[in-house]
Amino acid sequence: MNANDITCGFIGLGLIGGSMARALKEKAPGMRIVSYTPHRETSERAKADGIVDEIAPAIDEHFTGCDYIFLCAPIERNNDNLSLLKPFLDKKTTLSDIGSVKTSIHEHVKELDLEDQFIGGHPMAGTERIGYINSKASILENAYYILTKTEKTSDERLENYRELVELMGATPLIIPYEQHDFATAAISHVPHVISGCLVNLVERSDYSDGLMKTIAAGGFKDITRISSSSPVMLQQICLTNRKNIVTLLNRYISYIKEMKDVIDAADGDGLMEFFSSAREYRDSFNDLNRGPIRKTYITRVDIADEPGNIASVATLLSVNGINIKNIGIVHNREDEHGTLSIEFHDGKAMEKAVQLLDNHGYPSAK
Picture 1: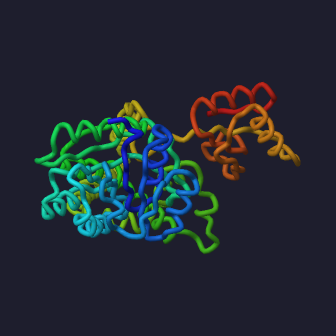
Picture 2 (picture 1 turned 120 degrees about the horizontal axis):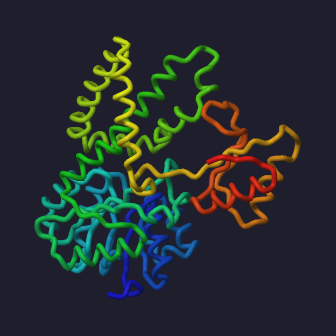
Picture 3 (picture 1 turned 30 degrees about the vertical axis):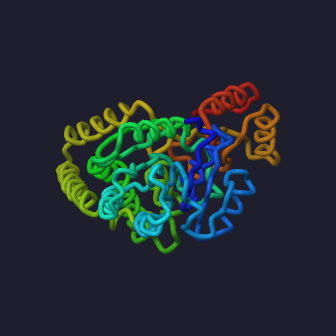
């Protein structure tokens, strides 16, 4: 099927749903997109952006005839929305979701006798920011997009969906939904819990003047960055993937106790083995731009503390066509190479900026 002839429905249009819709419209401008969101202003904004063609006032007959319908609400709400959607479904429609937990939705699909139309979906992409306003087609580029079929999924339906994922710029990966939930618990859900624990540990251990928060620098900020994610989303994840998360947390707690004993015993060889094996495995990740933990492109620049220097750096990059994602002063120099931190959207822009800054007397380092 020609992608420009496809109609896609979105129920919910947040960061990921919005990014998917943007990617599809970018690659197939003739594609028709129908959207329903509880907050109508979101759909209206997407229509003004040229992303949504038709705004549905509710989950109703506006979705009849869609080739694909994506459930993009929080996990538990997707189950309810699926029930509301069933009376209006066309048999040709492929149903999917974007949730990071698949067991719950698969069980609900089976109860509703919709297994032949459903294929679970999980784009392994995103940022800490939420909402349609932060959506971008580029979020999906080269990201793994996991597909979880049912026992009744036809090869033709699966192949068509796989092609649609590739059209978005993502990389489809087909795995059983049980395996998906255990894997994402390990590489995404448990890290969110650990990150939250570290942040709360520092908050509860901090001095009255907030010294720890003041001097928190690169390492701590990097490892706790995901704590800025949506609490509602994380609550739903923990409630719906509880068994896998608890299993892995128990393993992690045992590992933490083991390492506490190694440190307490001043076991130098044990510490070296621990950090070396972690480094070796971490460095083996061959593509840091895939998955939910995205690579950042940041360089740091040593500049004199003089008026106008930050503006000069920003202007130099701007006139040479280099877009800046973020820029700010680095007050704490732990593990830093400069006083001005500049973040870019991609590696090519960062490499060009590093060379340009060096040539103009602003020594920088990746």
